[in-house]
Length: 483
Ligand code: GLU
Image 1 (cartoon, rainbow, N blue to C red):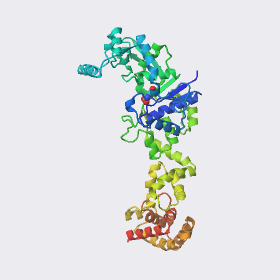
Image 2: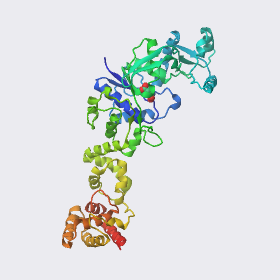
Image 3: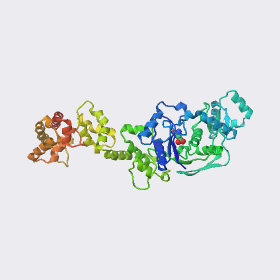
C-alpha cells in the first residue's frame, strides 16, 4: 500500500507554526515511506477568502523545502486540489447519504436555530440540533425543495451506542453517539463544510494517513460514521497536539509569534526553524539535535510523537539559529547580513566584508544586527565611567594617558595606510615604549571609538572600520569626556 498524506490548509494569508509543523510531519512521513505528499487547499469558507493566500502557502512550503507531489499548481491524478473547484462533486455524495438515511435536508432558519439555542442555554443545556427536520415527510421535503426554500444537509448521527477509533498519538478514542451533533454537510450556499469535504476528499484522493491538529479529535467519530455510511475504509489518524508558547499560552498573532513570516521577518533561518519545529512535538529518541531535512526524513518516527502540547521556546530556536548561522559559509552569511547592514549604513562608507567577518560568530538572529553595528554609524552617548575597568587596570587618569598616547599614533598614519596591520604595529610599538599594559590602552581606546563596553571586534578593527577622520574625532570626544 502506498502511503499518501496530505496537508490541507485553509488559505488565511498566514502560515501558523502549528500548521507548518503539521505540513512538516506529513511531508516527512510520506517521504520516509516512499509515499506521496499531497497539498489540498481548503477554501470552502468563501467568507474567509483572502487574496494571495494560496501563494503564501506555496511559498512557505517550498521555501522550507517541502515540495508536494500532487497539488493545485503541480497537478496529479486526483485533482482539482482546490476545494472550491470541486464544489459540484460533493452534492451527489450528500444526496446519496440522504437516500440511505444517513443525512437529511434541514430547512430551519438561522433565526429559528438561534431561538432554540438560546432556550437550551437558558436551561443550562448544550445546544445540539434537535433533528427537527428529520421528521419531515418525503413529500414535505420535496415540496419545499421545489419551492426553492433554502436548505442545508445534515448528518443523521446515531443517538445510541458509541463510536471509537484508534489514533496513533492519542490511542483509543471513544465517543458516546448521543454527544454527536447532526453536523451540516452542505451549507445553504451549496458549498460543503470542512466536515464533509475532508471525508470525501481524503477518500477520493486515496489518503492513507490523516495527520492534522488535535482540534479535530472529537469530530473524527462523525467523519468515521460517514466513511462507514459510504462503505469506505477509514484512514489511519494521527492527531497532533497544538504548538504553544508555554503551558498556558497559545502563540498569538498579536504578539507576533504565531506565524512563520514573523520569524522570517526577524531574520531566523528557515533551516533552523524547520529543525527546531520538528523537535517541538517529536524526539528522535537519542540526544541528536541537528537535522537536515534528509536526516529528518530518516529519523522521523510517528510513534515518537508527543501527546502533550509542544512548547515553542523562542530562546531555544534562537540558539539553533545562532548555530546555523555559525555554520553558514561566509559568502552566504555576507549575502544574508547585507540588507541588515544597509538599514544602518545605506549611503555611507563601510567595509561590509570585514564587518561581516567580525559579526558572523556573534549573530544569533539577523534583526539584532543593526543594533549591534549602529555604533559604527553614530557614536552612542556614553558615560565616562565606561573607561574604568578593574581587570584592565584602567581609571580616568590611565584612560586619558592612553588616549593621549594613541592620538599622535593615529594622526601619523596616512589615509592610504589606514589598515589593521598598520594600526596594530604602530599602536603596539607606542604601547611598548610607554611601558603601559595592552589592556590599559586598548580598553580606553575601544570605549572612545565605540562608546560601549561590548563590540564586535576590538579597538584596531573598529578604528579601521571607522576610518581615520572619524576615529580621531571620537578619540577627541573621549578626551573631552575625561577632562
Ligand atoms: N483546513 C483544515 C485546517 O486548516 C485542515 C484540517 C485537516 O488537515 O483536515 O485546519
